[in-house]
Image (cartoon, rainbow, N blue to C red; front, side, top):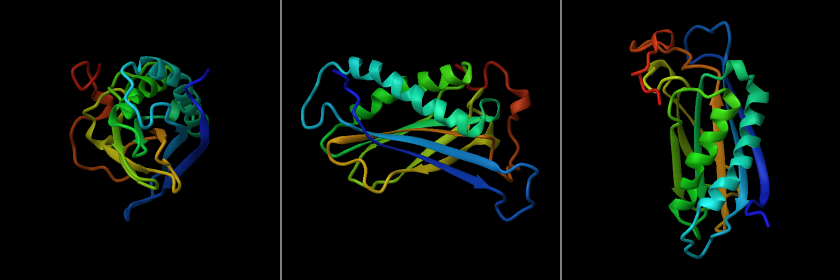
Length: 192
């Protein structure tokens, strides 16, 4: 019997044309793919969460592929992951997404080098979460530090978990604060 029971999914795409300055040649696109599932461990303590984490790889792949289809695999430059656990769960039920969601994005994107940032919370229905983003090949590319808000109005219910993956096509529209550029990334710049 599967531990994954999806109630609903959502795909949100933001297209940013400018932030008050000149309009770039290409707008920045940020996208979040979310799935709301029944929490198989809501209301009780479960010692072994590893089977749940392993099964979530399939959900991660589904969401990662949806984002790549939406943005274009070769266009993705930033990524992140997030989870919101309903109030009958615990933070560790969100932490299973670190491996499952991160693994899925890496596999779909061709094994990028940077750690996948994350955000997680235990919260009431309708909670919104800011998710940090950074460059997929090195964590210290300042121009690509960004965030996207995720959430669904009726989720997660107390016995649910909302899992999200986020990808985007570039750094901030008007980044101009210096620092490491993506063209100058080397092995010690926040790579795995």
